[in-house]
Amino acid sequence: MLSLQIQECLMKVLEDKEPPLNAPLAAKYRRSFAFPSMNERTPVILTKIIDYLARDKKNLIQKFGECSLWANRMDLSLSGGSTDVSIDVLEQVRNWDENILVNDSHYVTEILLQGSSPEVVDFVTDNGGVEVLHDMILADFILSRCGVRKIQFRLKPMPWYVSDVTPSDFHTTVNSLLNSNDEHLQYFGKRWQNFIDSGAWRLSSEDFWCLGLSYSEMPRVDPNLHEDLKASPLVIFKGDLNYRKLVQDRNWDTTTPFRLALGQFSDVTLLALRTCKADTIAGLKPDQAELTASKSSDWLVSGEYGLIQFNKGNCGAQ
Image (cartoon, rainbow, N blue to C red; front, side, top):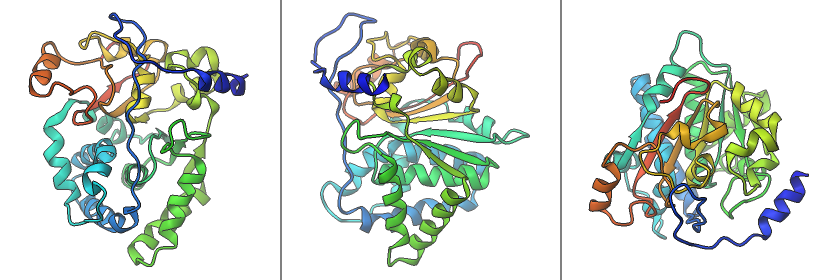
């Protein structure tokens, strides 16, 4: 049944149009891609970020979340088609902090640093290359420093877009570190392969991620996956495409509560890390959209603004 739905969804053609409020959106997706220079940039990225491991845990969770958020934009900004690796990654992230329109990372700090650490944290991934590398760094930190026992990576069974992470891409990334001539990269390659071998990192690729459906429809279409995610203490969703599916691809009033926009998926405890690349958004403060638009007319689609939005499953509105 799911395979047939995938075929049907792939046959549909998305057309841009101006929808009324609360109507499903049909905007084209804007994606970025990993560059060949990744092998040269990876040692710098790993070194800059892992250097932060000795600092305060609470602030680290927020900073790692921001690095993971901006990784998609960072991929373009670090390279721009060149192989210059001299850019300070964390300084770049700090410069972008003021463009985070909603930052709910403190809720994640409370979950990860509570008395009894969560058994598992789920990652619903987005792009490969530099972005998934940052996801792995964040997952390593959560596993190693926050007492979480397992990370469940939810990957695509096939590229919904060409740069989406599949299990093969994930293993290729780890293997590229293992086979590197750089001893620091080898260290992380061995470390992360051990996480996979021991079951501390688990990979799955459910068909639902490649359906043209919002996540509000998951309880009906794939109830088993929905129950798994609902049982998770925290599900981290990466990227603009996942965000669009979270908020049902609708043209919400920008102040619509994030929980309301999630629809039937609001019973899942989740964190959405998204750079804005499509004209749908929810959970902003009154006048925040208008103020942002006065600074940048294409703020919804430029990738220059980001969101770190939290929803507590089975609780009152955030």
